[in-house]
Length: 268
Image (cartoon, rainbow, N blue to C red; front, side, top):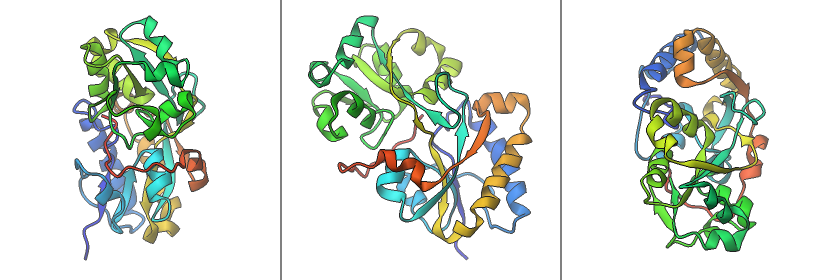
């Protein structure tokens, strides 16, 4: 029998890891009542796509952009977390544009202004919140928005904040959940940057399962809702998850694009 896969790596930080493992313990208990075979432990990998596309995926979490452009036909979304973000409807999130100082807001005015920015930290070219979101400013596809010479590839939102804080990039777009986690767990880098703008709210990162479990998506949703209710206040606050919102594929068509890139990073 193939080994079932579960991965919740998008906000898996060293500080959140114990809470995430506890959450999975509770989810696993609930899944055990459904008869859905599930792994004892969450899997973490540098390359997420093989996990997301595996027919053995029980639960995964992905960014909205790769889901809409690569995973919609082979996986099923069933839930998203509500982090209670200021200015965002339940179950949505946005990007926070950050700079070294308030004057860096000038780079967000239009495409030409953005093109004049000397350096932009991005967590990955697959990322909606850290890369493709700049299309809101340029009205161009993500790959046509930032010149390759501008891009400072960091591999993670936390690293992008640090790149701006340390002067290695002028601006960046940061997932608002990752920014809130950094404010909680790494405040010195947050204190060294300035918020210079906010993107439009978009549907939060979908929890997905393989097509073979499509008829069990309600059971998966119920398992996560029940598990979340079983977290202590400290555990729930540690993850910053306030609620669980159902998700469907049509929520993510807003992310459909033509400029696809197949390297995938987490929102660390």
